[in-house]
Length: 233
Image (cartoon, rainbow, N blue to C red; front, side, top):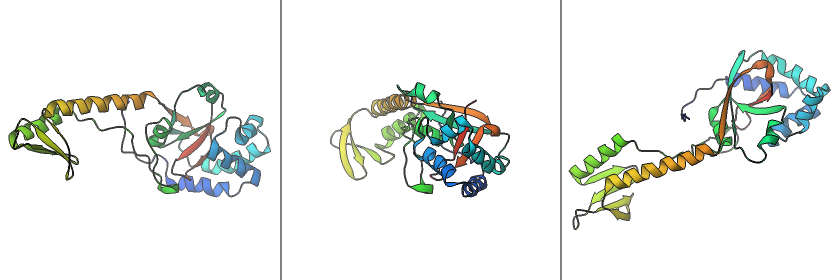
């Protein structure tokens, strides 16, 4: 899976603001149904029960969201992340699902990103380790062999004056260890990072779908998740 670091907002912030205004027009019961969904996403929770019955609360939510729905494109590219386990089949029985227009949010729920910050300042740093490509390893090894010194990130590799076949490794100013084969060490680091990354990628699954606006019942961005509540087809 190609892992993206840069994203453009697919849905303007004004649309989320319109949904926030629409929610203020809802009755207490309808508001509670949406708030409970957003905080816990319970299978068979209040919001799902209302939409399963298509009762007055469901009809109220549909009517309040209609002006917001008209601001959406005919189809929105949305993402959903899951970590399959013994409860996955239960999740498949839901009639409503949470999706996001931000792939990073889906990758977080798939176990590929962490969360930092609070409220609207939340960010989703990648858990994947950088993997040094072979051509960059070649460049660093060539520089070290030519000069006896190379700096890689915070680490510096310095040829030992007493034993030139060895080098000292510094993290900033701290001498942390030594070594005798820079190419081997860098290649092993790259192999280890690749294995760790694959383990992270294997534990989750990302779904991407062009979702018609008719299936979208609500959206919110209270914790920077760009969440779309979507009816399953």
